[in-house]
Length: 285
Image (tube, rainbow, N blue to C red; front, side, top):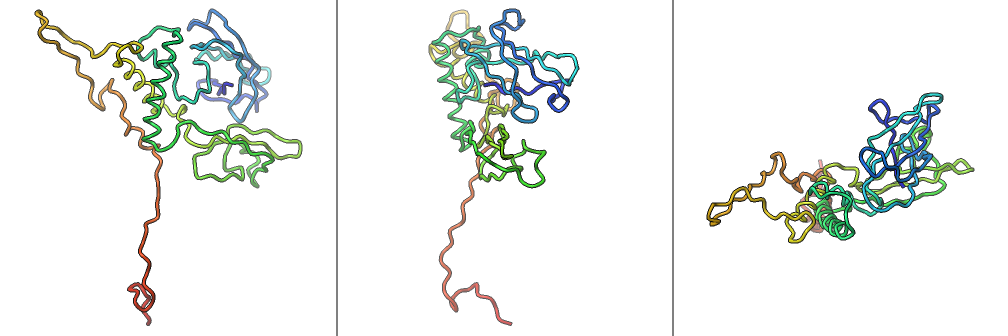
């Protein structure tokens, strides 16, 4: 499944209220979109501004897509050529082996062994993020059936506050479906969606690439970058890495601190002595 957000005029746009629709998605094997691999469609509207395509089975790899949609009833179709997909989806990872390979300068497509090594590097970098944030970076999908929207929220069904659903974690509405009796089946995403947070994706991608670059025999392994070697071969100078905050420096974990889970614990207090020995008794006037 691939959830697509239509673009029109440089902004996210929902064509359904104006009688439009998202017609089809075509996958190509090259950036020029000349070799068609397969197509899917039409898309199913999940909620306001989100349309879901059911993708056919294709070999793992990077694909470039063209999405055809109609902004409104009777309008001319428009094409969105900004979509790029790294398949398969749904691996529980915030980035892809193809994204790490591009960071390393490794040409695509990847071999099966390269893909396996990069998946391991991604999982390692993602585990560091999970340990620092104190929570998973992949949300959990939970479905509740026969829900009735709160009074006055019938036009805001994509808003989580419209539903009688309580949780102590981050939650968003993934999709909703009407039932014949007027109630709804609602899919909720609970937890942090790391794949939708650019700083999390960048950290995992760059650190997975750096770990492979420095691993002996790793994908795109280069070791430390040499800047100069003496004529006699007696000394070697290495390029210095950018310090934190400089352009090209690796992102640091503390840059993700705003998404860190905050734990609150009640302070344990000693039992209060009984009256009249308690020092906190109220004074009589």
